[in-house]
Amino acid sequence: MIDSNVSDFTDIAYTGQDAVQSGLIAGKLSSMNFNRGNTILIIKITREIESTSVYLQRIKGFYSFFNGKEKFKDVVLKEIDIKDSEKDKLNIEMFENVSSVFIPNSRSYIVADFLKSNNIQDINVVGYDLLDKNINYLKEGYVDFLINQKPDQQGFLGIEYLYKSIVLKEKLEALQNVPVEIIVKESIK
Image (cartoon, rainbow, N blue to C red; front, side, top):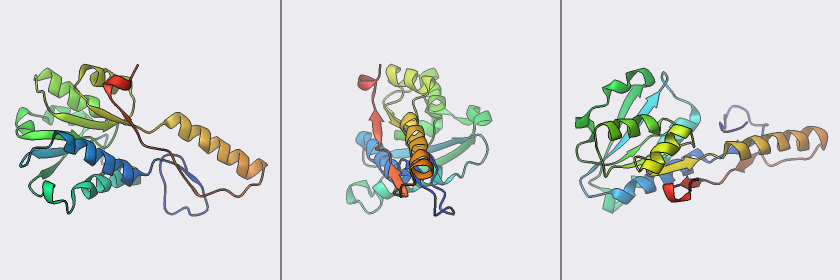
């Protein structure tokens, strides 16, 4: 399995990020702009209802960063669910008293576009994937952090696992996590 560790398949190798750990890191990045009492939004922008294990594990990891920490006892974590086709439901009031926004998938560019169009600044935006649109908003400063899943490395490791398993008949570790890579505008080309 590549990128999605489906728990029903126990005899198959998995290569990809530890989704809970990557969500925890997203929580830490989101807390960097934290002011006591401020709200952190988790904006779930999906094609339909997205409930993949990776997506849900990221959100679980995000919450786990804040759970039980005294300095975050007053933070408000608020979830907003919208579909791609409903991005016009984003409104200025949603972003009042917000210090950070976490988007647990590749659609950071939708929030960044809204922030730019409405001249809303000083909100820390954390998302996933090095899509061209996300990279452009990262360079412009409307996205602060992108978590790179390293899809090329995941694909390579998946093919390498197949080769080693089928051709070389090697016994492989069932889990090969790809390190979490945090991209900021200063580190992107």
